[in-house]
Image (cartoon, rainbow, N blue to C red; front, side):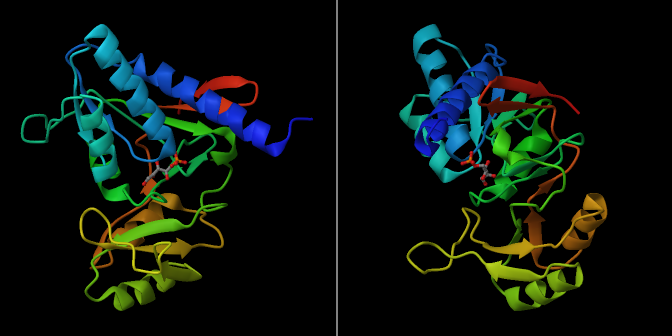
Length: 237
Ligand SMILES: O=C(CO)[C@H](O)[C@H](O)COP(=O)(O)O
């Protein structure tokens, strides 16, 4: 029986391999969406390696300031939506992936808005997760993060309660201060006892004035690379 830390090391190693595999989808001349989080970090490292070793010529749009810093440090050229309104591919992690539909919950890393804009702009949206992120029902392990304007947030929190959320709590940082996104907004983490109609819920949340976006990514995924103890599986919707 493998110890917990040995299992975690093995899963991290497989995520790194899955990230390397995802990066083989990137070809010379492509515009690439760069995700955020620990898994996306492996992917950006692998991409940086291809840029340095093979002279791969690509341009990236990072989904957070953190990913932008990492990409710049690896000499990955950065582009923007003025030059590249559409991307060839975007590669990112996720907090939950629903089996079958490949609907996602994203945003526990706080970058959901830019991640969704990048995903929506990409012809191919590739997700890398470990198998603990696969769920039958969305909201099983992760709350649904909702990005909202700070002004009037209490009102949005109340109206989110009407969409079935049991609790919507402002995200805080470890130091006790309010978490503010790269876009200057707040995040409410909303817990739903069950999500039977993800599309209906998505619409109800987005209809609340003051909500900027939320972490349900529905019908956007092109494929998921799942790193499990026995290797890497590829899921398509
Ligand atoms: O949505 C995200 C950030 O907003 C991340 O993709 C998600 O939180 C997964 O992160 P990790 O790869 O660290 O588990």
